[in-house]
Image (cartoon, rainbow, N blue to C red; front, top):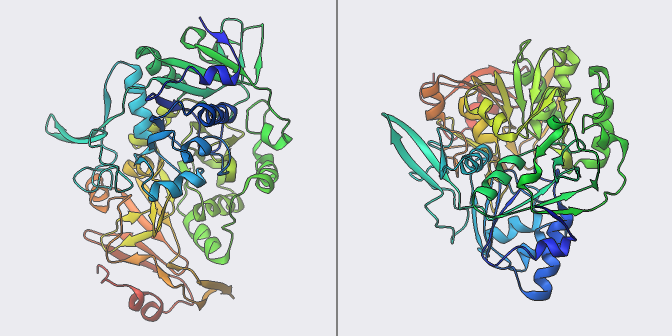
Length: 503
């Protein structure tokens, strides 16, 4: 039977050495106050310590002094297993200083491993991750020098086919955020942007004899409609009521509490952008890339569009009128509508459906998308892409590996080089004012996020759209597909590549 308690009381249920599963999506739907209560307890008592944190999509809030950043920085955590670290500003730096073990697994593979554990299975098989960095035959999932756990990902063969086997440690504690708890302890999510892995996490914890802790906005007497209840009360041990701060109406557009027709998508998106953007990627190069990439869309396509430069695709898809003829999706579980960006990436404006994250990755892993648009840090002579690991920095592979693993058409959107690149359009021609100091097309990528070898085996069509040309994946390497007006093929492309193109 659940108990209603304070955040401090709930955090006293966590013991030294516990494995905690955290349900959030980057900065969205994070039980911030529970994290901060855990930090306060650790500061006062030195406990709980030696924690392991598991999260499919990350659990920061784009602020190094909020949420879990404090107790991680002060040494309460020994190990983090995460799909994406982008919203965890302080933690990302500490990982590279070898302060604790840190592992980066594809987001969808963590989600499926959690669901497997909920069903009494030790792990989950997947073809996602074969021939990229997480494959133990290449690098494995460890990010820093002390991350040597080889139990998380294993290469296996079954019935003559090859897979990766993802296995998480047994989860002891669930920390999740919901909207309301009724008198039976049922947790509804009607004002949340996503459901994430909430149900799988709670089921896994209860199967392991652990403790489920839920932060809610309010306690209610009347039960929610059964379809709105994501976590039934029989799985809940502790409920903490934290009344939310008032938020702008733009945020309410993400809950699905009122209908948003297609004609209003961009109005709400612009309101959100003013409050939530972390960086601005709008520039001439990005617009050239987005416009060309959007030409790949066809009516009735099911689509995923990544963050950064790929976001420009939606701008030009709207201008051409095809945006209302396709179905956009986002990793967190949203289908239809218009995915939000910035600090609320993972939420959706005007979604048709929002379901559990594991179900979304069922769709992605099985080639259910028609096309995807992804960014990239580097592309090499073979067509491999590094999208998760920059020089002296990393964010994590997130859902990128799942999305690109089997989608029939993969469109990478990236500039030819960076750091100083200046490009303009004049009379329909591309003019390169100055080249960037850092090349993006290299002999060999530092780490593989997307395997060209695997894409060829799967029969995928892969193109690489830049501000000056378009490449496509050939039988052995890259082929030059298009050269834009105003670009000198030899001077602006061929002479700047450290490898030969395929004929």
